[in-house]
Length: 61
Image 1 (cartoon, rainbow, N blue to C red):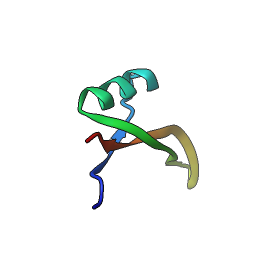
Image 2 (image 1 turned 180 degrees about the vertical axis):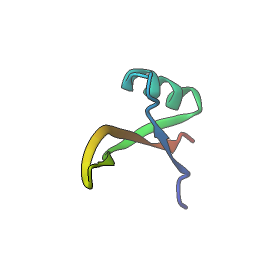
Image 3 (image 1 turned 30 degrees about the horizontal axis):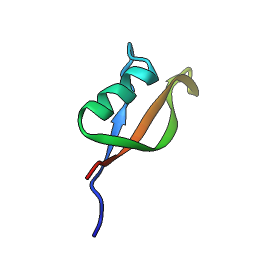
Image 4 (image 1 turned 30 degrees about the vertical axis):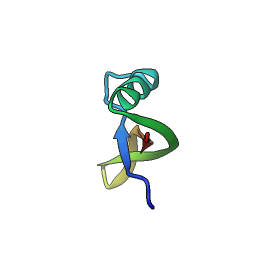
């Protein structure tokens, strides 16, 4: 029996705590976190512009 999982992205003007609160309000519990850099090409060079943070939620039974 597999558990339902969903990734929640931390919005631009949202703190990680607010995202965790949104995750738990939807009936999930936190199970992981991942971060990815977002790049923009400026003068032919990749330049990091922000970090994308995502939290993995597992549906509570």
